[in-house]
Image (cartoon, rainbow, N blue to C red; front, side, top):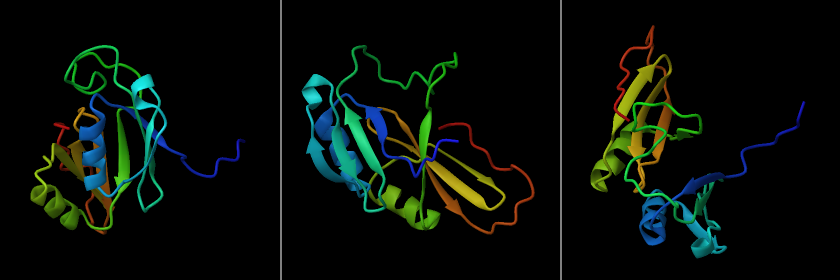
Length: 144
């Protein structure tokens, strides 16, 4: 067994550094360093929760969608990141106040979630573990 302590960081390829840094700063991430974005190296952001993002230099192919999520063909790869929030109600309010579209939601026993997208259509799932007493997988919204 490999002795893994935690997830170190999440790498996300982006198109526009300023736009994406602003988006993630709005979510509470703090700029740490730019290690050479124009050469394809990451801009590093850290959230007070300890979550670290590496925003990587622009893609070499064009397109506005997320190929892993927005096309009928399903490719292998990481489709989204899921972050735990302390209150989904507060999170919904924050999204509304900041004009961030909630693109989907679901509810399963003891957990509710919403989905948002960053400026490059990367999917972010925001989860709240609650005692909702559901007895099935009701309430799935496939539009994420």
